[in-house]
Image (tube, rainbow, N blue to C red; front, side):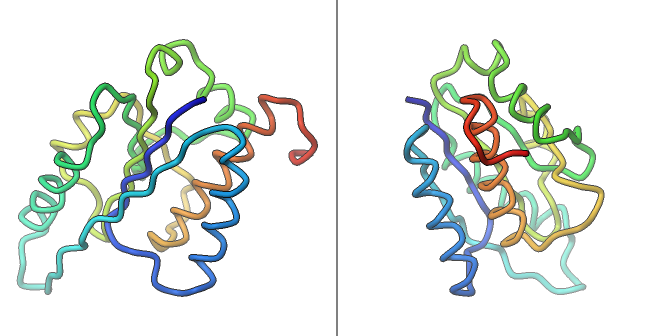
Length: 157
């Protein structure tokens, strides 16, 4: 069974996001052991330097990283794929060499360069901008969809 960790800056606040996440985690349990690590979102104002805020969040992310994991960061500059292409990427031999797959979702300011440079893969959900809560649930749905495509199960048409 695969191990997946999703590291997310900030928490799911509204109950409908929590409910959606619980549904996808339940569905994913047939394919993978999924762990969610919610990290504190650093508060900031317009006066604060974004790089300092991102560095603080990066330090927390580094502490939360599982050992020997394939790292995928969600980044607006990352590759965009169709669901079929994403499924193929999740089954790519370079990822399968690792026993663990970790997705990282940054805060509102994005991810610090130190985290981006650690990534094995940079992935973008869309050219559109989503809230981080929404991006997390969309990612979970796409991971589930990828497993369904891989196993030729009715879900993706």
